[in-house]
Image (tube, rainbow, N blue to C red; front, side, top):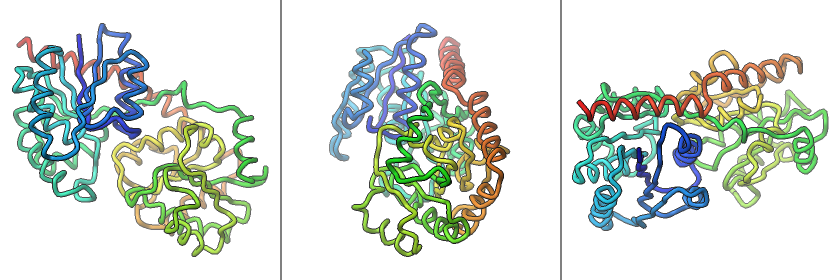
Length: 379
């Protein structure tokens, strides 16, 4: 059985990484093969998949002018490859991949939805495509896979066919989410952290949706109360060249408490260097980075966005979004715990991920969807 994936691009992002993990975990089981078509460029994830022997094609779409060509090329490849299932990821791919599959005579179509807050962010074109997808959701896909329950609810509310929607939470590659005590100590030493310092960590690209300003304001409130606390920020543009971020940090009056490492490729080691993880976003779907922090055994505080509360359950603290005082209070509750109690909370978070959110569990859920789609076609 060949499953052809159509995705907007293959840069490093939540959907792209989930696709990669799914293929890596799934391609040797259930008799499935996978191929991938990127509407835009190959990207880092595309190169990695090619290195593993996966067929990957990039259509180099750069603007709306390219849509007719891309649609025709998608149709041609679907007719040529004759996949059992066409699985699409995110709005633009749902629309173009779904229509191309239909026109190529393939009705075994699975759409993928990742976003949660349909009112925030995105261009007018994206909003228009979402509206078109809502209308077509009653006819084009057999099934619509949402990465989060909050995504399912949000899209049902704007007109998507709720009867076709299912939720498959992301699965985590637990074998990758490990770091040694030595690696932790080396990075902490490089950052200038002493043994007595408690490190509050943030990991994610600099973006309004991630709301680093919220984290910095909360850090400023915590700094006076907890002199041994330090703040570690890791992600694209979280470095000394970011003047806006630098001005926020300067306003706290505690510049010396912050360490900015920018974008790195060793996320597990970065997480291991932390003592508490903070998700401070104002908008998420299924927050991968929160699950990764939990899998590493970190006690976590998260804003109530997307499926963060569902993911954490009773293993961490959830606070309102856009509320730095509440965020500081939530982190403060963990800092006030005894060290053993803090570690126990982190162990409970790790156990939750190992129980319900592994790639094996995600693969089982996708396999059930694949079987359902194929059965519908037979009937």
